Length: 233
Ligand SMILES: C[S@@+](CC[C@H](N)C(=O)[O-])C[C@H]1O[C@@H](n2cnc3c(N)ncnc32)[C@H](O)[C@@H]1O
Image 1 (cartoon, rainbow, N blue to C red):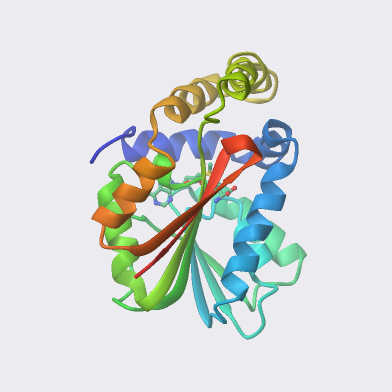
Image 2: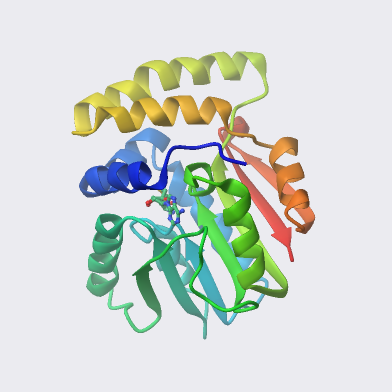
């Protein structure tokens, strides 16, 4: 299934906004993304993982939070070299370079062997894959048997009233922040349109099941503005 823009355009888009990504992310989610990301870590911690892949790691927020898990190696991969550069700076500043390694890498062609990871996490990444099925199949391949995939992704509130407020937020606030803070305004128009069209909730659960994952669960966050999916290999 191809839902998204060509990979080279996605890479260019994230390269161009990399310097402002963290700030904009905080503004757009009112800082709530940190809370949801820390929930990913809590879910991961319970599985006592030894090796985690944070796919589409971006500026490495999730990888950094995951480094709290004892005796666990974390690898972050992303197609945007500029996002990775910023992630590496943060990791060095925090002295976490022995626990976390970041590298350029494509979710649709993961450079690791089958059954390599206890957990794969993806924060706001799957929506950007050029070929979602290919990315999910690759993640499935590199997960160990009984391994866990944890995804955090944008979704849409179901409640009509909340949905109306959310639409206003997206149309006015997201565009405004995009205009004010980003050289690449196109990136935020894309964010707006892809949030509307990307499958979420039961529909995304079906996609995970079709990609051979089992025991798929999902939890809506902030009236459904984001959703955490947990799936097993
Ligand atoms: C919205 S950012 C999310 C970054 C980070 N995970 C977070 O939660 O803040 C999406 C990231 O997905 C990356 N990405 C998109 N397609 C990818 C692919 N096929 N393989 C690896 N990374 C990809 C982009 O470069 C970008 O850094």
